[in-house]
Length: 170
Image 1 (cartoon, rainbow, N blue to C red):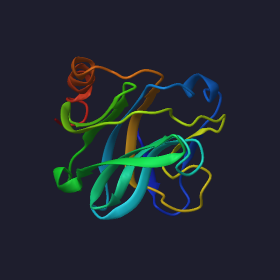
Image 2 (image 1 turned 180 degrees about the vertical axis):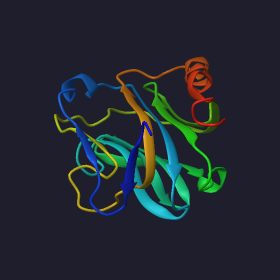
Image 3 (image 1 turned 90 degrees about the vertical axis):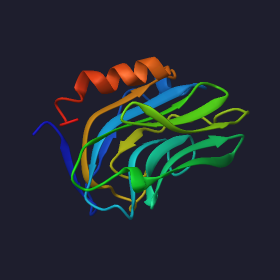
Image 4 (image 1 turned 30 degrees about the horizontal axis):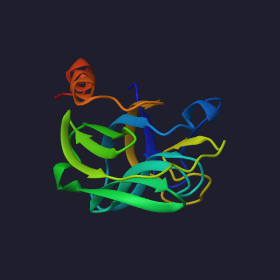
């Protein structure tokens, strides 16, 4: 059906080859999700090993956009009450060098100003679980997973949502 289906058991995907290109101080993580569980610990993306660069995931009843700044994890939380188990959702996390933002279906839902340097390494991008770990596998479906080495603007995020929303029933 044009998506990956994860069972929260051992399913995941590793994106090799783009590791150095994503070692910068701005980024965007984008995907369409259809969750099977509203209260889960399941990663959509992680660059690097556990909490060493940046990640985007469900944790309990929150949507979490985490960045390792100056060697410490910084999390931006958004309530997962925006989600349900019936529909697809367009999820985007951006960092432009000073502000982290989380978007759901093209609308900014949370933001946080931060300063410092993102930790970098040449580890891979993990999709469907946390980096190099054996847990936090996602329970649901993922489609159109993109990672950019720059922060998309709010207009670009809205355009991305509009481009694909009919495909995902929005």
